[in-house]
Image (cartoon, rainbow, N blue to C red; front, side):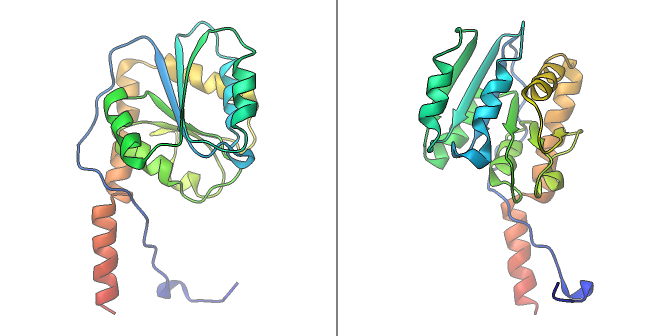
Amino acid sequence: KWKIKGEKIKISRLGCMRDCGLFPSKKTNQLHLVSCSNIVPVKRVLLLFKSLTYVQNISLKWTHIGDGCEMDKLVAKINQIPNSIEINLMGHVDNYKVKLFYQTSLPDLFINLSLSEGVPFSIMEAMSYSIPVLATNVGGNSEIVNNDNGFLINANPTPNHVAKKIIEYYHLSKEHKNKKRLLAYKTWEDKYNADKNYTQFVEDILSL
């Protein structure tokens, strides 16, 4: 649009801070899913919940971190289903509590079904705790999520399609799951480590 020459442009990525190293998977048969966003239409948290109702014959726990205008709708829908899914709605919490939750609970899979995104900080943070990510192919999600460190699905998935990916992840071998966890962590370490990125940004500015 602005006809700027490519050699005059450099990407300086955002990132998040963390220094705890790689986190292993936990030993349990329960699949623990986590999502972190405002509960608003663009984040499609209600679609995520509906997708979970299509997951059968799996011990399933879902934790959502965040609050918003669709919280009452979500709670109403949750109250209409059997107690086959363990659900934990944490509401709005401080960021340090989000990090503590990831560190102590070791969720298996982070899910983002947003209708639009940039490159989500929530995904960077989840990956920094070795959590693979299932995300829709919108905005900049494809810059951080792929089928090696998680699952990148089409922009407008059906609940059934999301459920199938969740089930697919559940049935992966332990080795395959651990590989996704390792590659999720490496994605953060290589591209979204704030300590590296912000130091490099300052050095680039000072060199002008």
